[in-house]
Image (tube, rainbow, N blue to C red; front, side):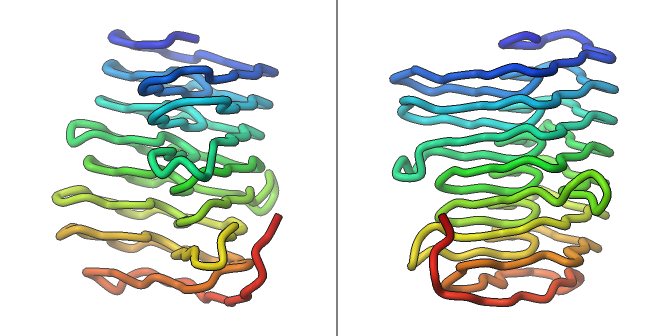
Amino acid sequence: IVGKNNATLDSATVKGLTLSINNDNQAFVGGVVGDNYGSLQNSSASTVDINENSATMIYAGGIIGYNNKTVSLSTAYKVNITLNTVNTSSRAGGISAYNSASGELKTSTWTNGNILAYAVGGACADNYGSITEISVGDESLGLGVIKGVHVAGLVYTNHENASCVNNLTISVIGSISNDGSASGVAYTMKNTSIITQTACGVQFNSVNSIENDFAESTCRFKAITLTTPIN
């Protein structure tokens, strides 16, 4: 819809779109908005493909690439993200790749898609703000597949003072590297809180190590570890 949003977007819909990134610098790409400094609500992206050809640093999300304000009541359905996994600065998330300290991701879903990047969070890769009541995967709409070198069902990194409350992830998580690792909820936490998350039915495929770096152990998931990388 827009590259950069500074206003209120309500009931925006994107369907059947392919985005290809050719950028030697930093890129923020989303199924609906690339760079959000406003409010996005009641919006959806469906059957959208986001593909990176080249970028020095890229943040790609199913709904928003970079979020600096509010995303609510929005959905990403069959949104596929394919980034360069060799690029250690490639980040991807089902809702948003980057959520700033003033950003709020709430009451939104990502289902029945495929994500591939160096670092992936089912909801968000880098979270500095708040994530509340997000659903990653759905038993009826489709679980979704999350792959990368370092992968997490909810957030790749929950940074200092960030929060995640009452979120759900049901997805297939896999590492493409023999030395890759994954977590059902958060890959890395930095002096922050993860409260009442549920990762039920998460399937770990081809994961060399399961990371459990939690400040609070109110997260529930069962990990099955295999050692052969998935394609």
